[in-house]
Image 1 (cartoon, rainbow, N blue to C red):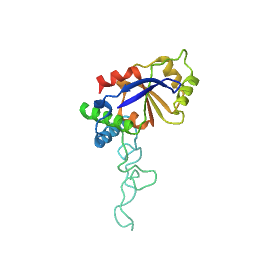
Image 2 (image 1 turned 30 degrees about the vertical axis):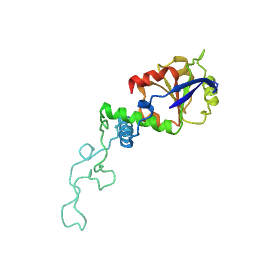
Image 3 (image 1 turned 60 degrees about the horizontal axis):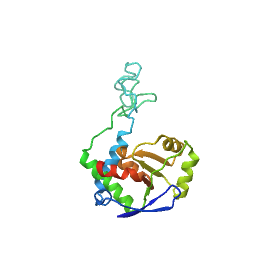
Image 4 (image 1 turned 90 degrees about the horizontal axis):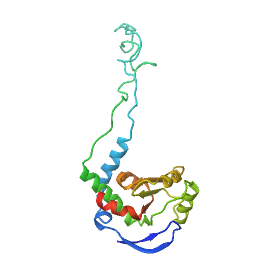
Length: 207
């Protein structure tokens, strides 16, 4: 697929880039995408939720009433879950949600996500650029020129540029990432994907 290279003013530079079909033109695998996104979200869970079961709750273990003859249900100690202020029955406890996926599956998921972005015409190629100084205003102007100022945008660089990164840090709708850190979730989460021209070679090597 051939795509035009734009400058930071949003104008066509006259250059054309042919996207590698082995990277951007694969047949999407929805199940691989599902597993990759599930892993990403699971691995970001803290898992610090905790509740007090009767084994850890402070309180008397004395039997609060006799077993029979009361006309009501039998009961043990005051820490029973059926009483107000009692323990939690089968409550959440700290746990680790992490799970692994093999490299081949994660690669297929990333390629599938990129293929969907190409089909949606949501990928833009920018010529290499830099800002003289870190200014959020400069990044806002760049996004406005590309009609991406109101959209969640993923900016992909070959290496993280300090001035560009600092100019982006205060923008909630923009995420900057290097090719080596690219993942399925971020690709799908963004409505538009801006790829710097010099990073395309890294795509071929990584994916």
